[in-house]
Image (cartoon, rainbow, N blue to C red; front, side, top):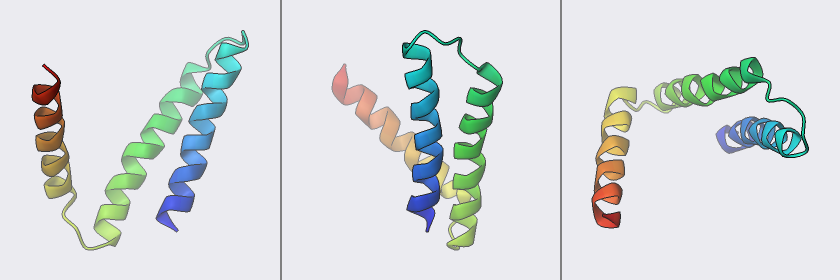
Length: 72
């Protein structure tokens, strides 16, 4: 269910990007809302699964740093 819900949000972000590529002005309020949905929902899902959102964020941060270092 989490992946289905996340897919809907990603689809909404794709729609915004596609509309913008087709010449429509970027709806910044909608973009901010969808990015907020990604953040808020992910934190809620971590908690729903019994994971510490803080630990998940720290693990992701470490992975991002490692990835950035590997690319430099």
